[in-house]
Length: 294
Image (cartoon, rainbow, N blue to C red; front, top):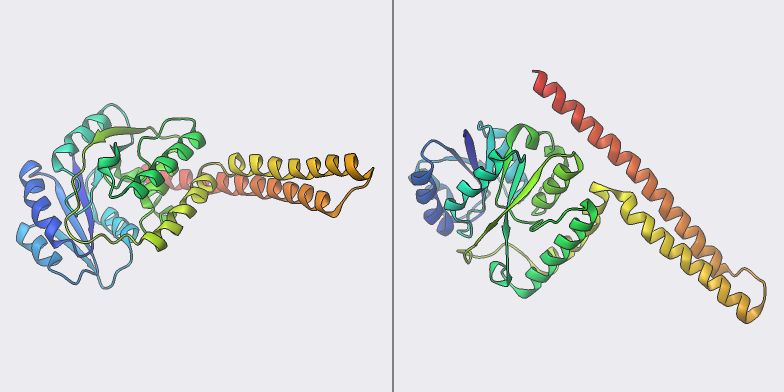
């Protein structure tokens, strides 16, 4: 299988020094691309010593931006994305490729257990994201945020405009593939403790991951999130009205009116978002068909 391996890296000389020789020896025919996202250490020197292709950003643009740069530069039919911090084992690429050969368009290396996460907080957050996303797509999602994955290059390129420049590109790409009706599979993997310093900020990225929840919902099916919320808010308004009637007689309070109207507005926003999402993915499908015709 003709593959390109894309590794986004920012100050990952320690991890790359371990990963690149192993990767090159296992897959000598693969195109290996390291995207240096404004590193200030010896990341570039390590890549040059290993003899792999390195593309450098003049400044740090984010993990997602590095992924997009590597995807555009790749030439393989399939792209394998992996981290440069030593957590992902190059030997597991074989398992991803086997799953691809079964007919999957995107295969994600799924981490399992508390030992695969950096902390209990990260494990708890990822477990919640997985359950929420599984509810959205009506299919079990084993790992929504794993950066170790194999994807059909042409299909991935059609979704580049959707991907953020930050760390949430795995979430967005996974939900985009589900939304487009492509086959998404998961392969269990084991991860090692990262080498070097983590770039995750507990407060900043904690807020960002919280926003991912809403992004997942609005990307896949906004109405599935907005409709229950609107019913709940409007239901509180009706409940307030019933309690008012019981305690004070037949009168409609401002609180009841506000809650019912808020529920109606939430529903209409969800309906509008659903239509916009459908148009967005229709444009993506049209671009993909034109690319395939060429």
